[in-house]
Image 1 (cartoon, rainbow, N blue to C red):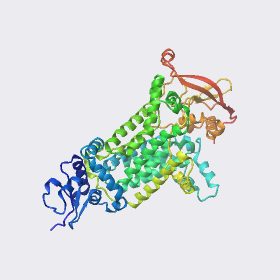
Image 2: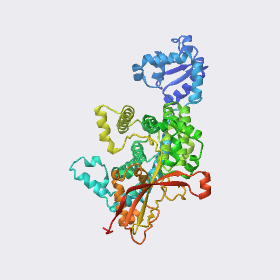
Image 3: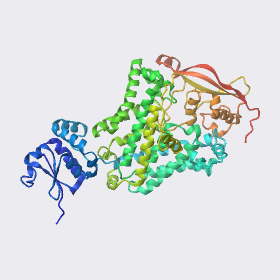
Image 4: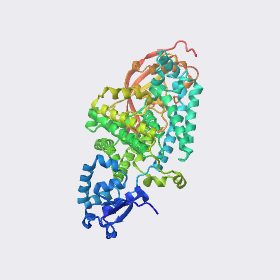
Length: 590
């Protein structure tokens, strides 16, 4: 004979009740029996007939009765939670019960007429495939630049950087720069580790969700490898998308059958978009506050695409509207992440639209792809099932309890993330939280975000020139950054030409504040092929020039008339020298 089950009795004529009873039935399975009050007759004489119209009634196996909010909490297995919030929950239940028609319409609008328990197994499967692709892009992009940037004869060699940390004698140097490159950092190792990252990413892309432990191992290795480069890459690996990839990659290690990791990745998605918007206003930059920022953005951003040229031609009223829309989407829409399902999915499309427009007009490497991957968590399995092969969906296991490591990660990520938010708004933190942020920073498992907090209103470009005699000068052309005014802006994302990007930042300051730039000139004067390979071509194939100089030009997009008349995409005006002319009288190779 089977054990008696609790019976939850509801008003079968109430549309609001039927929607939520179907949802609770899916949550509780066979553990609870559900009956409409119109069908119970006199089966439960201990319950007055008028009570059925007032609230749901839960008949326990021993015959005792609970009603209202208590009945709901007990049927769902949340008795202990009810003891903490009994009064507010009963007040809320009573208010909703008196306005059932209103809440029925709200439920239809926000959830629909059929609510399923939220599952994110397919969502996580898709996210891990997307993350694998992004890791492959990040490592593959770096593989073809790593020796020119960080090799023994590169611009900022890793070996001297690590040696300078080692000379401090501190045992904490491994925590300051957590990297496997402490053990080997020759050129072959650098390239080999990049391709190892590509191979691991390909393995992750091809594995199924059933191989959970294997995936977790791959994700851990990918995180360690990328952190190894980010910790030692100095200026060239200090971009926000590098930190974002590490934070997302860290959380992905704990992905699986629990619900906590999807919520943590939603929390990351919220912080990414919200902070990107709010820092623009907190900076008090007048160009954001008077909605003129995008009027400058199209031509001053680091690497615009050809569509940015066309966007720059749009009228000022549109630029003001687009600036306001950007702020609105970045600041307001992220809160929808925590709203009911339909509103959350509607908000997701706004965030997707913003990222697609950014991707179309600017080369932001894999940043847009990673942001879009995070937005996946605003959807659920019900919405994304069509994007996951049926055989994969059948392999996805049932949900399991949250494991201890995931709980520890959740507490850590939430604490550090909230600390970053508080610090952004107040500029200060209690000493213990400040210390937590400081000591965790090298691991980059929780970061702060916010691009273009202060809008750059002029575009200054550094044009490198070489000369054999100090009289006739020939420019070095970069692969992607503006140079020859006749050359159209190019699409390069998701690849990141890190030298081209860093040249944009160098132009914002002075060469004395950028020691890497002086070393870059030194390598060009030596004619190092590793560094020359980062450029479009070598204008001095026979031997390196005797003299080098860096000239400043201010660049603007041309308009339709000038473009038609001259064929130029850019117009430029010389502004002087970036740094004094330099010469290596003896171009010794060593």
